[in-house]
Length: 220
Image (cartoon, rainbow, N blue to C red):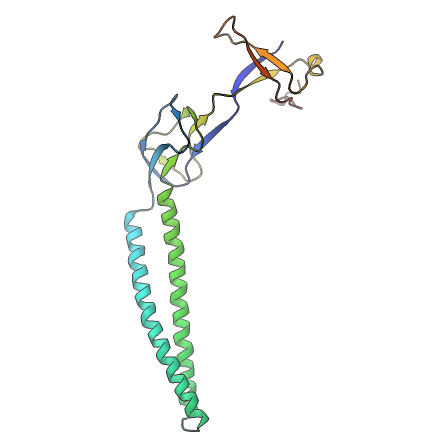
């Protein structure tokens, strides 16, 4: 005989990956949910104005890139012409070098604008990912056994646990067994337990795991 506690075997703590404020909570404690069900809606810190500003900036950079590419094409033509003239000794060295430097300068400006576009694209993708994470859904099916989310609550990314969802169809009994009885235990053996809430009723199960150390580190 041993005294123990009934515990959840499979459960998930649901949190958030974005900073913001909870706008809606769609579940309550004790409610059964299916995987993928919408649980909480979050208004993110990323504002719509920032998204629109990034789009406008992207349009400006692309227009600037088109103009700079045109200048690069012209500079390359100028350099090609000067190269031909130099081969015929029909141009000055200073003019040739000037056209060459003009081509390199135009190419460098194109590279700089492309780098700005790539950086802005990365920022826009991050904002888009944040927007998608404002809808928190159930990672597993089960029952909401704990809930701390409330409308208006301010959240910090990767820090707040909003609720716990557990599969109550399969539970575990964690029992402290006397030392002289431990050697009589084997994995897979049948075990029976009762609970005070259901006097006279007995449940059967299988011994799933034998802990090698006490759960509370008391040494007993």
